[in-house]
Structure formats: C-alpha cells, structure tokens
Image (cartoon, rainbow over the protein chains, first blue to last red):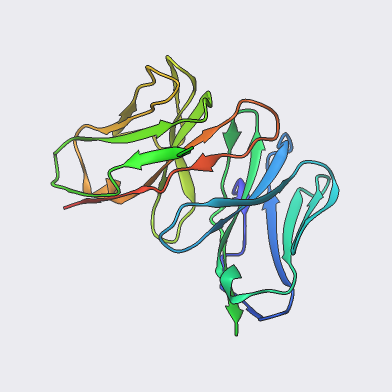
Length: 109
Length: 113
C-alpha cells in the first residue's frame, strides 16, 4: 500500500465549476495535512493545511479531513484557468512530510 | 527576506563528476530537507536535518551526502554523478513547531550526461 495515494489525473474541470481533489494516506499517526500547488517547472507552494477532522475554508479553497477514513480532500470553488497545476497532498508526522505524486488539474476555459 | 535560496538553478554534469548543490535559508529554521523530483513523479526525500550537526537519511540517500555545520546552510553533495541522478532537486526548510509547512527553494535542475 502506497503511503499517500492520489489520482494522477488529468482532472478536467470547466471554468467556474468546483474542482474536487482527493487523497488517502496509510499512516494513522499523521498529524497535519498539507496541500501544495505546483506549476510546471516550479517549486511547490503551500495552498492550505488542516489538522482537525472536518472542513477548513480559505477563500475559494476548502480542505476536508476524515482521520477515521484516512481521507483528505481539497475543493476549489469557482475554478479559474490559473488553478491549472498539479496538486500535492502531504501528510506530516513529527519532523517529516510525505508527498503524494499529485493530481494534475486542468481548468477548461 | 529571501526565504530558501538554491544554487545553481541549472547544471549539466558528466558521468563520474562531483558537485555540491547549495541551499541556504534566512528564516532561522532548524529543520531542512533535500528532495528530488523525477518527471511526473512526487517528491522523494533524500536527506534531512533537524538542526546544526544533525543529519539523517531519507528514502533515497544512496549516491548523496550532506552536512549541516550552520543553521542556515544545508549543502547536498554528489560524489560520482550517474545518469540516474538526473532530476530536479528541491531544498526546503521548516519551523520546528507543530503543524508547520515546509518552505521550498526554486530548485536545481541537474542533468547527468
């Protein structure tokens, strides 16, 4: 079982719609969960993080965490062409963060 | 405030050559990390450090060495470059508190020919 699993995509979403990105993880000791966005040829940049069960909203982004199901998701509302990128799910435990391979998101104009 | 700075941005090496990838951060973070990212793949941890004088292996340390003599600097050394080490290398730092994210440098694109 992979430590962090994400659908590699590409996930194509019309502009203005909601993009839903999913992630499962295997380490039940994971404490915090980060979502990074990575444009092609660039370094990862933090979008948001969550560490408690439930939802956390930040602008157009909502992170959802269900520790019992070992599942974390990222919703992007009112998707924009600039949201087209690879999104990396990254659970952390103590001093290490494990990155998933990422989901490629393509927003259709 | 420059954050995490990596040099060089690009480099081409011949098989068997050696080089050092530089990484420095000005945020006084104790935790620093080196990752490699192959095309279409996720980030794989090479080495990390939780403070000056302390380093530890990640999941893909073979062929690499690191040192951490100061809080600011965490260089990564390739002793005998091999084609399998062609990749993009990212350095990151993190504050040693709960629920802190990693901050990344811009990366070094390395080709071994």
